[in-house]
Length: 321
Image (cartoon, rainbow, N blue to C red; front, side):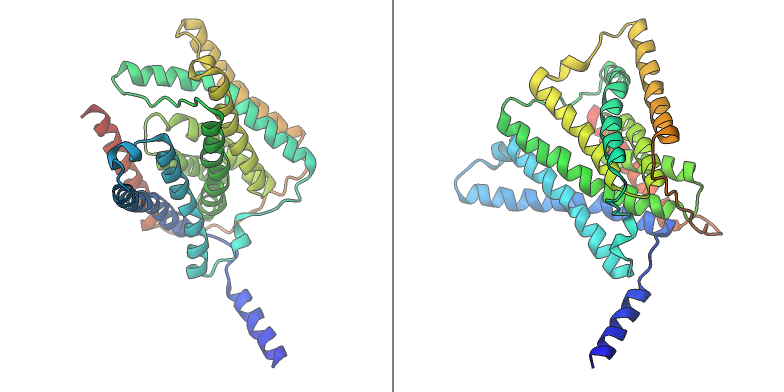
């Protein structure tokens, strides 16, 4: 009996896929766009009911920083559900995304360094885009961290959680799937674009795209999402730390001709440094190859890109209404 059970278990394991396709990428992206919205709606309805039941003012409490942070956390955590349920339904091995911790301590240090370099190197360019958005009439949301409690809360909800769940979905599932249809460079760029569009706003479009390019390249060069998580976390955490200690204006330079040139030079320098680190320092370059799928691009991938574009345009129009 034991031998038969073991044999059945081995058959079930064998039946699982150890790869994603671009069809999976499209489906996962659609789900990742819709599920957080549904979770936010559910949190809003339940939160409003609970607050009203205890005699509070739902409108005031729901707009509070703490409620929004909890809502953001639960929406992000829904990505874990997407990952686990999708793999379960489609019979995909959970390890397919690349949970490789044995990449060497040097690569951990390099990942941290890239996170720091990316933040300071790209910050000025993003500040210029922020000034552009303000000039054309788009109101930007400024993050304010006035206490250590808020800093700790944001660290958990905006640094730790996104670094884990977003890398699982975008560099683990979506990027891997895109590589069965496109070459590595196109896959990295498309995954970065999807990552940026997922944020759904003009303010969070350019930076996630540029960072997504770096994260995608790291994933392909190390065959692990762990260094991607480190870069992602380091970047977000330092942003929160500097905002808490110095305020949002600390990293901004005046908009002058020299600051524009400096911003462009620094942004280019980031990618040069990342390339040099990859070329001469990375010791574990287990770049994997995948079998390319012939035929037309998946309908689900087209639909996912169209849906993300519609959501982005809707949010953009809403800023002017």
